[in-house]
Image (cartoon, rainbow, N blue to C red):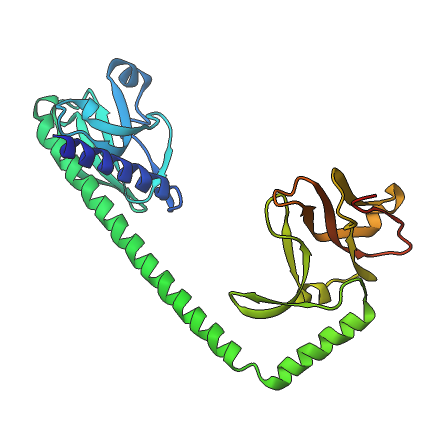
Amino acid sequence: MTNTIERKIEKVEKREQNQKEAGKMKMVVYEHNCMDSARYHLRKYKHWAKLITGVDTTKTNGFAIQGEWLQVTSQNLVPNGSLVVEYCGYDGSREFKLYRVTESGKEEIATSSRERLVDFIKKAAEELEKGTEEVEEVEEKEEGQKEEQETEEQKVEEKSEEKETSETKEKNKKEEKEMRNEMKLWNIEPYKKVSTGFGEIDAVLLGEEGRGRKRALVPITKINKINAQWVARLSAEGTYTRGTYGTVYVLTEDREKIKIIDFGVGAYGDAGRIGSWNDFLVSIEETPVRFLMRPSGG
């Protein structure tokens, strides 16, 4: 019994998801058969229409049809290929009608009176299931095409990387060197060789690792691409002193001239609670800039 309920819940959730996805599909116009009928007819007889999102086959009346109510006296926009149930109390043996709505119009699938509604409900459930399977097939096909395209793009990218010659690499190095010569560095060399998942790289290490600390790694390739007059490391590390905090300030009128690239935090003691200091890497876009450094330990 529990498995049956779980399967039903799963089906409803899948259909609701399909309905959301349908919002991305092409929309078509749906009109109730009695949209242009006289007011007398519309008031005397009951009318309604529903965009079907689910069917409860355990019920034997109109409440078996789950979905979104549609307008009777005006046009509606529904996803292409949607199932719609239409009701008109005047039609007697054809009170209930099941339509598939497409660009070419309404395709009548089934009709029923109130007395033979069980067969009609089963038919609606079958048609909805068929539509769900078609959507899944389309989604699987699109997903497969997307994966193939990504694989092809990856192959092209790999081939492009393989074609990069030593001459191109030398050219890149030369450009980086020229850029670096234009921009001045302060308190950055010597660089550290750091091992990463991509191999060894030259980088600037800021701060420390451990409790109460923060380690930051800035690749030299990133620094070389910065467009500024200066790139400077401003470390407020001082002496081992309890209860001190080292940091760097910039004058208010100069703060628009700099940008913080990254920062780290160093500290004293195993838990990092005896004292600490900030370690900044900044780009200076315009000079002069005035800093005030307060090192740890005073």
